[in-house]
Length: 513
Image (tube, rainbow, N blue to C red):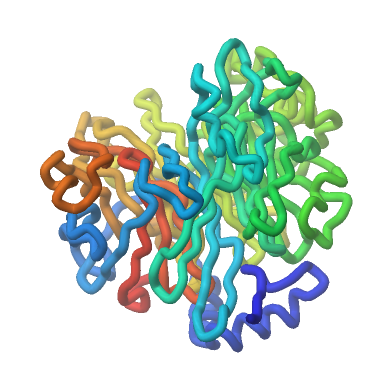
């Protein structure tokens, strides 16, 4: 059995690892990604617009496992569903609900088979019943906190999935005792950072706090998850984490309305490795150069800003009300310190991804006055230049972009987490039938890649063998956890409303993904 981690090695092995990627997956993908990067020409405008998909129009497609038309996809694309809420997992436990962020943490050969391991978050919050703690009664499932906070137990956590030769073959509980594990990020040493989304100063009956980042290994039967938080990365309403393999630095987002920025964590150990982030580091917040507390919520498409970083001395400081330029806001301790040193103001940052020396991150905030439906930013790490590459003021163009990923070909894909109603570019009320997976073109336009088509009756679910499935129309519930296989052939994603995971394949070369 041979094995390699997703990013194929530590920072000190990057050059040889890149050669290994090319050998394993071929030069054409890398060459196309390079061409996409070179052709990245943002076209300045007030806002982004929707264009036709190069893949073709979306139509309902039946799941190859259940036969149900769960998704709408372009011609030639197919998918398999797995890990529905309350499905029995390989460890005998039921699949938890509220699927969210997800990442590929291992890709390896097992004999003649090709195997991928993913870690999937479950954005569950609290329960009055301790038996609902993820992995309850299973000592091998590490847990951060089994105590009660204000009478409630934390029931979020993670499950690990194994995908082998085009099929899901295994799943099991891997970590529990946490609150609202929303997004996270894959390391390049075979682990997933799972992030709690809560701004809280509360302390549980076990003396534990929440709002931290934790690390989950690819195989918890060999190495259990560390139940201790990575305190140096801050206590806040965390969203995503993204590693820059060239430096070993991590970039973090926070979903704390009008009291958040992009964060950078400089580990004391930049070479990485399991538990290395517990050695601490330096946390900073993004600041527009020469501008104190710049309001970044209303950019124009392609607008650029020179940036620098504001230090955060105490990443574990309690949160409080902050009197900011946008009014009194509830703020986490790290942001209060960053703001005092000039950090910028964003609406509600969510997804984050590093590719080709660029940090991509989303601001999902949707408002009607002024009209906003979401933004995506790109930070060029070589020049410290921040650019607005998606400015959606119309829910048909982009409806609250949440998680995002970049394909091995260099295409940007974002997950919608909006409402079924909102405004168009003219400020007129409109409705949309479903939440979508959306592709972002280099010029700032968007196109539809997939749509949530879940609308199942009890009879349909029973016939498909999904007697515990959610009934009704769930088309306007969020997509989350999108991530490509390292070879770019499979797109994994989650539908949170019904709670299930899909693996999508098809003619990717026809478009930007």
